[in-house]
Length: 355
Image 1 (spheres, helix red, strand yellow):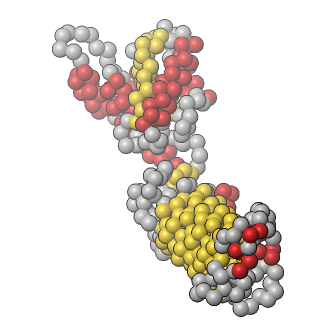
Image 2 (image 1 turned 135 degrees about the vertical axis):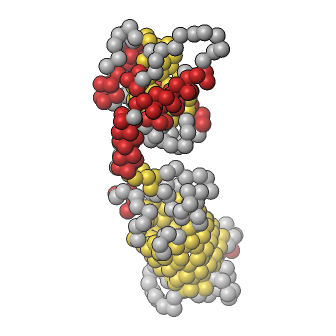
Image 3 (image 1 turned 45 degrees about the vertical axis):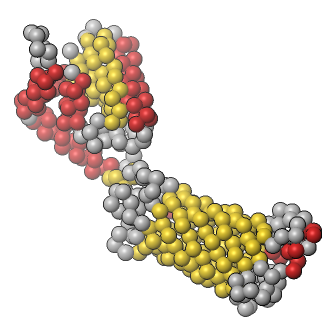
């Protein structure tokens, strides 16, 4: 009988409705990774003097955890003596650390993988090494040449190409030397900071969903597909029942046993929001049509997002919340089972078989 319920649920609904207009497919751990290179210039924050500018070069390896949040590993080098105490090395300083990014556009508007322009912030901590500075070896500055630094910046990005795999960006930022001495105490001081302007290019590697970005799910299209499937189901009940009976026959024991006729009106479908097990007003209205004293079997299912353990718990919670509501109406629950993910479509529902 369980197999019967799963077959009918997938045939009747295919995908459950979502209560948001847009959604995106959950990414795998190695998805949405990018590699970038950047060049630019910096000066001292006192702007005395502004020129000559220090030439800058950097590399980034990053990952987007969602359309809003991300992080990257960055290494930058500086060439020039403006702010570097007359170093005699080719590379005057090097800075490497971790930055965290926030996409402001995707916070305040719906995510669109075809969007051209994005504005993000970047803030991070790093280790900076300034070569050839005699002050860095003084006892009061801990006798080393490395510093704790903080980067704050904005990223103005343009997504290029039909697949939006490439991203050109301009980043004005400030790298603060937090431990310039004495005693390497942490402090923000404009006398030990480098304002910079970097221009770079990122390449976003292809993801498991076949694109170079998060895959957007058009919820309106999914709902239209559900409605079409429901219309087909209502128009051809005989064909549906025929398929259902085939599944029932496979599970009937070899000894003689009476089997109730399976009809479409024997089944009640209850949909849920993504990640939720809360009954909506429409769901309660549908369940209220089941008369007290009737025997029912309830099966909860989930869509493919999330881990197996999470989906197993969520599907059982959906079956339980339906069963508890029906019990309150005097309906007899023969079984309430959560079966996790069934099929490859988004089945966020509970199926009630009324015997």
